[in-house]
Amino acid sequence: MKARVLRILTVTLLLLLAVSSLASARVTITYWTHTHPPMVDLTKELIAEFEKENPDIQVEYTAIPNNQFFTKMLTSMSTGTGPDVFNMSSTRITAYLGSDAVVPVIPSAFGYKNQAELENAWVKGTLKAASKDGKIYGIPSEYNVSALVINAAHFKEAGLNPNNPPRTWDELKKHAEKLTVRKGNQIVRRGFDFFYLPNFYWLDFGVLLGQQGGHILSANGKESVINGEAGVKALQTWYDMVYKDKVAGPQYSLKDSTNPMIDYVNGNVSMFLAYPWSIGLLKDTPVWKDSVIVPLPQMDPAHPVTHAYGYYWMVSKTSKHPEASWKFVNFLSSHPERWLKDVSFIQPRKGWTNLPEAKAFPYIEVWLGEMGKSSFGDMSPYWAEISAAIQRAVENSIMNGVAPKAALAQAKSEIDAALKQ
Image (cartoon, rainbow, N blue to C red):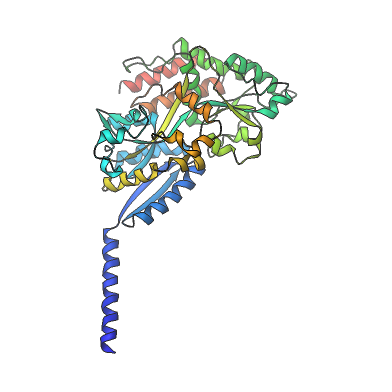
């Protein structure tokens, strides 16, 4: 009897020691992203699966509201309190690379012998936005291009053919005039409109600027040229829709940062800018049955341009567990089919277009076509200041009626001051 009790105590002790040893060996990594409901849901699922496969690693996940994410990231990185892993917009990456705030990708964490093997696993050029001096610092979690979503029911109601959507911005304005519904002097449904969210203003403006052949910065990046002829024409296009054509306006927008497509979903807009992630916000709503995704209207159809941006997984230089962090990123990036199906994120890992989920993805040919003519536009370590200047220019012009030329002259002054810091 005593021997049996002794054996039980011994086994129990060994188990406790094993559990204690495992607990002491377990590392915790922190992960931050902006908010996007489908993304957050899948992220939580993948974290649970990753922790099950890797019991020695625990992941603490935080989703930060879109309008707070970039500011909180900058503050936390400057104070050394940031996360191990974070998901950063391509527009902001240059600042993190310039300040040496992140560490290069560790190929072995992805199962590759060297960086060349890792680089070859992604579509050519898609890692460039997160590269510096020949080293790769980020893995793309999503690659986005602009397109146009139209409400076919609204088109038919207005006597327009949804199979013949606008191909130029001039045609879009004419369509918008017919689609706009008014009660007296009040607009109750806009024919077309842009996103009225501060973190989208640079995208709204960037789409128009890129198609005008314009840039925010000079070729050497030392001066702003945002108020040049191309910039003024770009902002004037938006301005005229609000003040001249009167088919759009920020006063009609719900400004929901959780679901940027909310105005379109509610039937308050007939045509809206769309991105691959838009599908995830539309397909489970009543308006989806009437929605059609078409190529982005162009200023010059002979020279089509589509604005692109992406998000990249990166690892902080302050991380005490870079190997575990990159291992986690590898796990996240190893499920492009789930990101596409559940979140509508295009992850440009080679072979993604051959996936059944890609072939079944709504309007895949449109997205591939837009990707083929896409450009990231200007990138700068001063993007926080640049995007803030663009936000103020848009607010001054579109919301307060200041002439585009004057609003962009002020933006140039602000951007030039930031570049001289």
